[in-house]
Amino acid sequence: MNLRIPGPTPLPPDVIEAVGQQMINHRGPEFETMFAEITDALKLFFETKNDLYILTSSGTGSMEAAIVNTLSPGDRVLAVTIGVFGERFAEIARAYGADVVQMSYEMGKAANPAEVAEKIRAEGPFSAVLFTQNETSTGVTNDVEALAKTIHEAADPSPLILVDGISGVGAIRLRTDAWGVDVVVSGSQKAWMAPPGLAFISFSPKAWEAYAKAKMPRFYFDLGDAKKYAQRNQTPATPAVSVLYGLQVSLRNMLAEGVDGTIARHESIGDYCRKGVQELGLGLFAEPGHYSNTVTAVTLPEGMSASKTLSALRKQYNIVAGSTKAPGVEMIRIGHMGYVSTADLDQVFDALRELLAERG
Image (cartoon, rainbow, N blue to C red; front, side, top):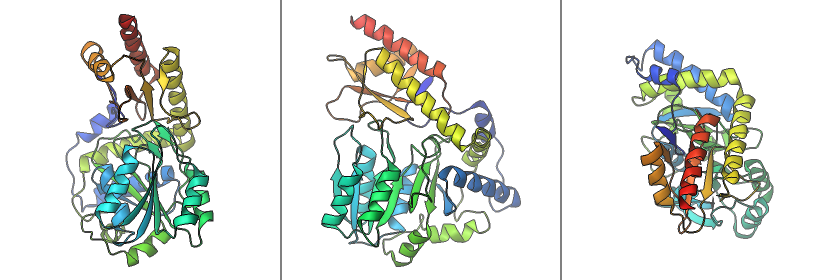
């Protein structure tokens, strides 16, 4: 199967082999050595010296951890949303009692930093601003650097900046420390080339100051507990050991390539996918200048059904692509993060070319 959804992503052969290893004691020295290695490697790709914790959950768990460890019920939060997963971030904050002011952009568009800054000046103060680095529902990447800069300039003191980097970090540059981002989250099943089941969260000193005052309920996702156990390279509860085995191998491969090399590879494969789509005469849903290097949202010609196209790709060509997340838009999504080659994408283009020819 050619799995071209935006996650979970295919696994390299050495990662598949690694996850099949026998269990070890998660309170023993072997685990502690592995956990320390993984944590240090993740920090390199997050480009941070801040604390970083590994949670056993989906990426959504790390989004929840970002909220409940920094905020209290009633805190005013600006949620800048450009798609489905930005909406999810806002909904989590709302579910825990935050006073969420939502600033929503049309699907396919990126957030405008100047407009976000003006919103903060006009309607602040806000305890936090949250947004998505890379929105897989639309194939759009926000300019995190520009957004963080204008948020810092818009208010003194500036609000916390919480970023969902689940489908971006590890593939798309995010300089956590240099750009002053307080909390960044990600998930193992995306660019990290590991199975689902782990989430990552970096936490700045400013975030820890907020933690000391935060009153939202938390237990499993209490980063205070994570911090205590991380001091001896352990986790508060039983971790997903098999996923950690795989992640250790994938991170070693990524480190051999280097942070810059890994990002450049995703830039190259992203360009390749967009070029191939356009050569077929198909459209790109995202606005120019904000194309994602991990997933491409492809608009289909008038009268061509997205659901029927996805069904034909699966049944006739053994290709599984992502369905539309934009209401009323005939669109498919092609994932190209992590373990992916141009040959994988060529199979998709060849199949689409035949389907377009059948349609006439």
